[in-house]
Length: 62
Image (cartoon, rainbow, N blue to C red; front, side, top):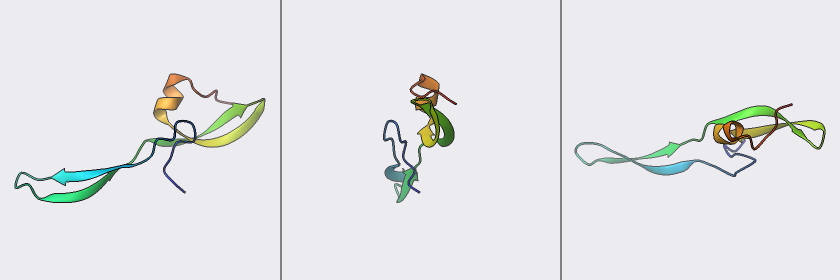
């Protein structure tokens, strides 16, 4: 399964970890994705949503 929010589309970011000697290694920063039960049109559905969407009230738990 992809690590992507089904509401806002937030996904993993890539970049480098840089040491003091300026050695670079590739890294991934994953979003905090939670599986929650969401009410949509009176029906309950399981979605993978980031915590920012949960805290901001973009979904209604149910």
